[in-house]
Length: 262
Image 1 (cartoon, rainbow, N blue to C red):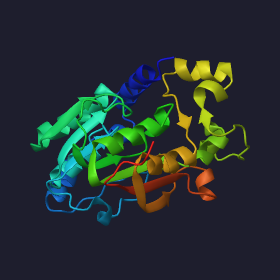
Image 2 (tube, one colour):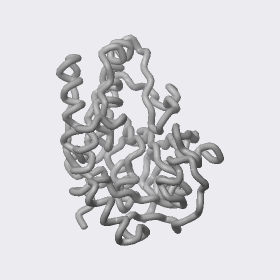
Image 3 (cartoon, helix red, strand yellow):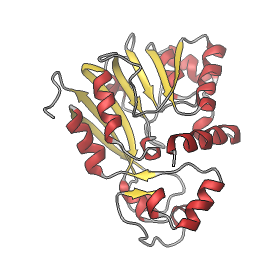
Image 4 (spheres, rainbow, N blue to C red):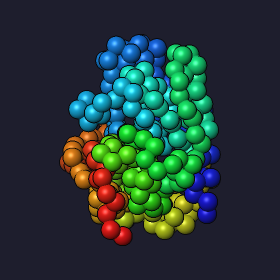
């Protein structure tokens, strides 16, 4: 199955429905960012620490799988030279609308987060990658490409799900009922849902998800040539699991000057 094509259509649909991650920021947020007062998230609720950005003004910043008219416009208003890459045209359209409304210079690119071949090596100072790699079957290529396009000492700010999210049924977690372990890890909608449930998910136009191991999420960053410099956990409103364990992580990783041996 062509996962990227299916998920593109699914996120186009979510944008049309007004999903919370597709609603553009208001003018007031852009105005505040221009004054240096900004807040963005990698995970559902916690703002990213300001110190994680380093010198943001004038930096070449890639907002990776980050369409929706939210983080990209704010970082541009704060002084970064921003490129937004996303798999869904409707998400990029939200960024275009904010840029036009606010007079921001945003470069918009349609594409797969795991394929940044359009960008030369060492093109960016910062890669900002909020929770999104749950929508690709393999996450290590995402880290390798991020490392390739970052300059030595560049920063990768990434949000992702703790794989324990996928031990349980999504409906049980959101519905406040008891949590019963149903799936093995690492998780894939394609192989771990029963065929009828997978067919319903596809027919409903829901994006396909993948719960990557921490070995691939964090170990994959280290193997790609990063050193970990920061980490925090976050919850999610309405999640039963979040009452017991934070289901999301964010990391700050620095690009080593020399690529690791392969």
